Each structure stands twice: as C-alpha cells, then as structure tokens.
Length: 447
Image 1 (cartoon, rainbow, N blue to C red):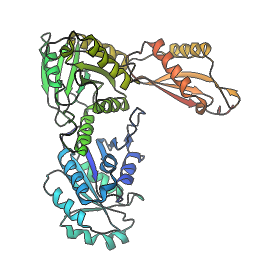
Image 2: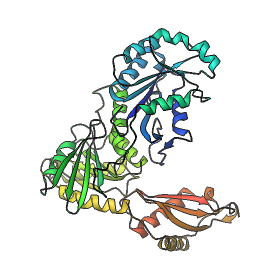
Image 3: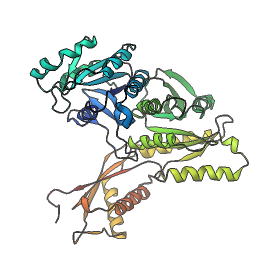
Image 4: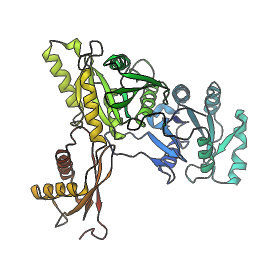
C-alpha cells in the first residue's frame, strides 16, 4: 500500500508492445476521470487519473523518451532504472504474440531489485484461448503472477485496474487541515533557494507553525497561521538540473513534482535571478497552467543584481518574452538570503486566492456579456452573425464560465480572447487563469 496521495505509475516496455494503447485505454476510459484542462504544454505523456476513488499519475515512458534507437536493449534498461528510482508502481508490458525476448529477461532481472509493486503484463492476448496458448512461455521468466491483457480490446483490463487500485490508498480529504486553508506549493530547480525561502517565510512575523507529514514523496508540508488565515506550504522535491543525470530521469523528476500540483491551490515557482529562466522552469509553469492552478513567479537572489539596473531589466524582459501567455501571474523580485520582498508575498497570495475562488452573480455576468457584444459585434460565420445568448459561472479554482451561442465552431480565437479580456476586466480577475467554455444552445445550431 503506497502512502502517497497521488503515486506515480510508470508504463515501461519495448517499443510497439502497446504502452501508448494502454495509456490511452486507462486515461480515456469512461470510468476514469482524467484532468484534461487545456493549457500551454502539448506533451501528453502523463495524466492524472482517478479510478474507484484512487488517484495516480500515469506516465508513458515511451512517450517521454521518443527515441528511435529505443530498439536497443540499453534504452529499455535505462527506462527500467528510471522507473525504479522515480515511480511508485511499475507496469511492465511484454508482447504476447512476439513471445519472450532477451530484453524481457534483462528487464525482469533489473525489476527484481526493487520492493515496489510491479505488474508484469502480457499484452495482445484477446481471449481465454489465446491466454492458454501464449501465456505459459512467460512463466519461464520466473514470475509468480502474470497479467494477461488486450489493451486494444479490453480483455483482462478490469482485472488489471482492480489489482492496481489495491496498491493505492483511497484518496481522502485531509481532515487535519482547518477549513479554508490556502494550499501553496513551491517549485524550483535545486539551488534556486526554495527551502531557504520557506525557512525565511516561517521565520517572519512570529507565525504559528506545525509540521504535517507530506503526502507527496520527498515533500515537506508545513501548516502555518498568518493573520486570520491558514496556509499549507508544500515544499516539493527539487527538479533536477540537466547534465546531472540522464534526460529520462530529469523528465521523471519534473513529473514527480507534479504530484504536488494535484493538491495545491497556488503554485509558487522560484526562478534564479542570476541564471534567468530555463526550459525546465517554463515546463513546470506550463504544467501549473495545465492543471488550472493559481500562479506566482518569484525571481529569487535579486540581491545579486543590486544596483545593476540593466541586468535587472534584462532578467524581467527575458521572463516576459518566454512567458507571453502569463500576463496575469504576479512576478515578485525577492531574496531568500536578505528577506527582500518576502513581506509582499502573503498579500499577493491572498489576492490570487480570493480571485481563484471568487463566485459571481449570473445577472452581473450577463450584463458584462451584453456590454462586450455591444462594444464589439461578434463576427459573421457562414453568412450569419454569431449570437451569444447568456452566460453563467460553472466552477471555481480557477473561475470557469459557460457562454451559450448559436455556433461555437464559428468563434474565432481573437474574439474568444477579446471576451476573456472583457471578463477579466469586468470581474477584476487580473491575477488568475480563467476559462470560457462556449456551447451551442440546444436547437440553435446553424440558425
């Protein structure tokens, strides 16, 4: 039984054994609830899945590798080593039709070295008859339990998912946290000053602090009271630097930090003022947007640029250039060493959280929509003017609104952006992501 709130399940195996098919089967099955918030990252080689109240992050290692040389055994070996080090549960896929290969023997030997749960899955078995014909040779690998499966046709799928769920504890609401606790996760590469920043925050203003055992592996959660509010600070595992390890391990460690994103309200991403923004930083920021989280960027070690106006301007313009889609995210220049700028963090967290959880009356939303349409008429689509009938709020964290129209397909990206900006402006939502969903009013399509 794994203690993690959201363990990482890694799919490993040779190319063409069906990893992607199984990944799609698990994440797109009607019984699985999958986070699919649209965002800036397009690499969908991981997904957060909830199945029978059990949540996990599923990682397709073939997807994060995408190496044509992957046919070579040493690449499979790397994949297995990365999964052993970083994942909580491993699904090892083999090809029932191709039979046992030398690579299978080697990977099974590597996997014997871990005490983590391993599922040895023999894919491309479509029926009980095929199970009898094809499965027996795989027992030569010296494995007690094999899981016959057809990822394509669902044979054996329910049994595999039930077995997987038995290894994961039911997701529970943390009753030990006071109501309305703001959950804030800190992200950043090693040596960016993440822990120093949290220590500095905890040392300020005589806050009431208590330790909460971390639910994500390698994270320490601290509950503190500041003024009238309670905060859970989540210090995530550091995201490895490039060059310190194989690229595959680096990708795994980024994904591992994602487990904290599944349980926070606001992601605070620390950048290094001296190094500027890196590709890893933009990826983590992209993942935070994918999950629809509130976002605050801290440019740490600002003291090192003291007095150098040109370098200060260069760092901030580089952040703006690489993150043009982040106009709403507050950016604070801070120093964990000197404490510079840290006093501004809690007021900013407060204003982001208020917007993140804000609820608006439907009448005000419809007035706002009417004014926006009057100011800038909707475009014409298929010789007819687009119509917008009404809008209402359908969710918070972040604020989500549905707008009923006569043809959602005709809404150009530029007009969609115009409406989003009007909603931001009219509702004072300048610090959080917001989502506008357009739907056709029943019976109105094409009229």
